[in-house]
Length: 239
Ligand SMILES: [Zn+2]
Image 1 (cartoon, helix red, strand yellow):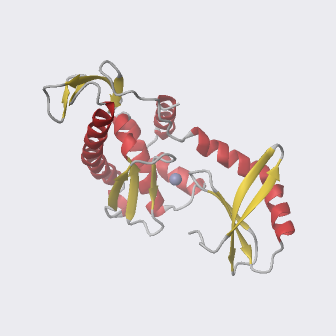
Image 2: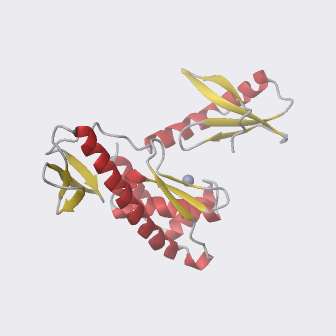
């Protein structure tokens, strides 16, 4: 949780000038967290001086930069889109050819084609119609994959979290601290089912293990032994 009253620092790490959000707390030592969207948040005791805080962050600079790089590798990228016939768009890991049909209505999937009703010169309208369709599909597909993923965690009695599906620039998913709300990126519906299942399993594992420590990875390994290969495929697909 980020304190809105926090301050912004800039810490120099080698050649990089790193913005750091500083939050004060009652803790006695400095805490540093790198979030999946690559924000760095430092939590410091009320009395700690800026100099000492910046030195402490710089002292752990290697770890901070490694964590940022690891998350950067995993961020979804958006290829430039023109929303014209012939362009390909991904759905469940397969390329689909966009067809703009002036006589059509709405969006329908026909084999490996996505047929969008609309004027060919109205690329904005085509984009909006397609985004709406992806939103509806994502909610349906991701809700199904969440049900499938829950089966992996049935032995632990994991309850189904409330699911929110939203377009996000910087992350595939997240789990609330209380383990009751899962957020997934609409764009996951472009990935293959096994890649979606990896993200769902990752977020469900956070209900039992909130942090990315050894216990988290051991749990994920037990539930989904090939999770690394799936994660690699997801990263390569959007690289
Ligand atoms: Zn995670």
